[in-house]
Image (tube, rainbow, N blue to C red; front, side, top):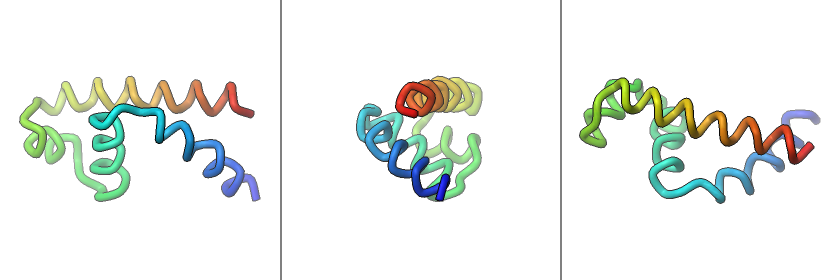
Length: 68
């Protein structure tokens, strides 16, 4: 049941992300691409992908904590 609640909390937070952030999340978790693969797809370095994902996941975590 907790997982369902988490998904209901997460959905609106995902909608608040900008297009690039949503694309990163989709490529990483939806399509299970590595950071190197994502970097090649987007034309950026793996390190930049790592930073972008870290920032995006931090936003989502903070939103999850305030929404509970």
